[in-house]
Image 1 (tube, one colour):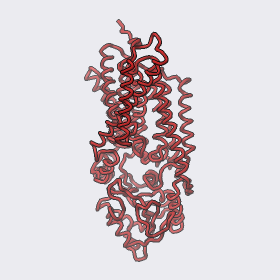
Image 2 (cartoon, one colour):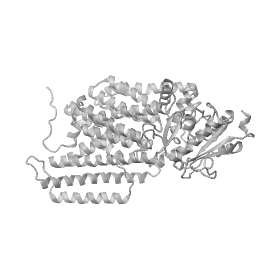
Image 3 (cartoon, rainbow, N blue to C red):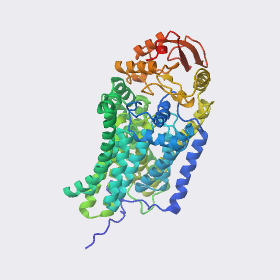
Image 4 (tube, helix red, strand yellow):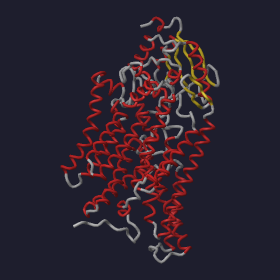
Length: 633
């Protein structure tokens, strides 16, 4: 005896009905033009931001220079400090070997990965919603994540973050296919994607492992042995491959170097980095952060109620058709309208630090729980397609929530790390507004109108973001810094300083000579074809302890480094603000004893400029004739 699938309800759909429903299937003829719109938007964004990606001072030097050092035969983790997984730098090193060493090799790689990520976002969105929601999700990800000047995908703060995000999304997609097809092969593919995520960045790997666990639980629901079977198919590649890779590195460099010197697997994390995470992501004031999350949730609920009451008012004014669902009485509608206006006003007065995604952890937890209940109910009633559809929402919700683990108390829209963590949250945010929310509005026409108003607000907000970002790129990034390895358009103060410094480097040193830039900015060494003599590309607070400073001094001394630059890079986000004053005093003291100031480069050449000045500068130190380094090791 076969069990029929649930019919579409004539009553207002319940939340279970929404989770059980499946959008129109993907069709190449209909969906390809929609995705071409996404690619067109990306092309417009790339044209607006052309060569304006990344920052020569912050992070870019590491991402450009570490792969080049691997090409030159240095060993990751022992010769070259790196706190993320090995996959991305070795892929980038391979690209340098295949093509050539230039900015565009990395930028082209970023654009290629961006297209893959947007393809996965579109596919994932189409599993739970229609074409409009999928296109809108991709457009929002493009302008809020991909193209943000701080945290873009073309020149990411860490390619491990970009690749990790790609592989977690691929793991989620493979898990959904495995659920829909009951395919053990796709479960293995999900585990393989999780393995790659682990080898990119540890926390991304953890998110992928959560996805593997959830899909295994759903596939084996009600049968413990089956659950173990599916879990094994996922976890053998997901954990076995990284274990082999890291064991190989440990055999070459030692576990201590991996976990202590490079902080892999969050081992021996310095207090300055913990301070940074607490400061940036709200963990330093958890109750305040939770208060903001609650206020943000109240604001979203108030906006939803406001739109619903307006939709009901309009429906009543137009007159309800005979087949319309029961509607709210006028007094209830007006009371809801007034309460929602008050709620939005109070949350606006309380604080302005309420991004639209602040409340996403609450929303994702609710979605995951509700979807799991809908999954269990469908399984008990024998509705396989409803079971799969609810399971899809559960997998997506769990994946999005696992993505947000590190920024759980402060989910912003954009930022160096956040840009890689919120794409799935954006998909589900739109799913709530465009699919779930209208089902709570009484009346067929009111339901449609509420959805249209929500879509209009989201679209207008997206357009405003795109225009603002485009104007900002064109107004802020105006200086074309021409280098032997590509032209980089930067803010004028940074571009002027690096142009003057590059000319000085080319005059004072030869290609291959060691040149150090502290605490960040080794992109100068990259574009000038000079060698960074230090173990670490970045030595902001926490990267060098006392023994690390001594090692840096030995590296500078043994390499007879002729030229050192100190960048105006203030670091209040790490608590210690100034290099040489608040941290790394021993290293700076040694530099001052053995080197002489031989130039200040920037829009202002005032030698008295201090770190933290609004105008960026680079101070050059040349090796003195009497310097300790001149004598060699």
